[in-house]
Length: 207
Image 1 (tube, rainbow, N blue to C red):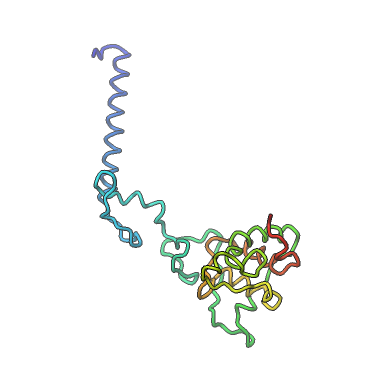
Image 2 (cartoon, rainbow, N blue to C red):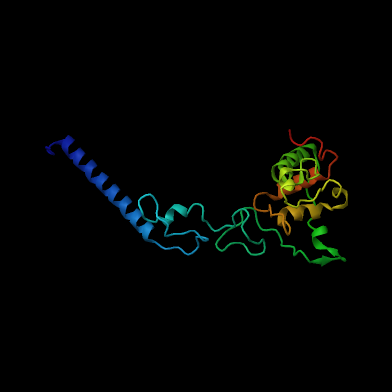
């Protein structure tokens, strides 16, 4: 190939740039593939991929410093190097007592008015997170409970349960019930509380 002339020089420069880009990409892949990480939460880093080699960097996007759904964790000790997106709520211990009552039955106070918009939004959220076990009507007649998962029928209990109790139950979960504090925001939880405390609860769900 004749590289004399303006066109030839342009082709030559393009080829050199292409070689440099490909080389840099290969170096990056080799560097990442041979790096070591200690926080892959039981993933088998030695498991070969399609070419018989392990590429740990494939897991980086999933394995960020966070607590995964259904994974054991705590709102008292956040994952190292993580930053809450909307601040951190004061942790209330499950056995904390205030004025001779469980503190989780008293705090926090609901800051959200039970407007039609809040109740409607809470209906959709309840049907998303709660109805699968407790039932759209709150009577727990669901396929989940029929197969042995103990979820109480909450419809008859709701009048006696305080708004903070319901909020904290969603936030922290219970002995069997998982926490939904990671999947829901503060506003989500109060909207669900407003729906569960409203006359509209169990009257057909969000459909």
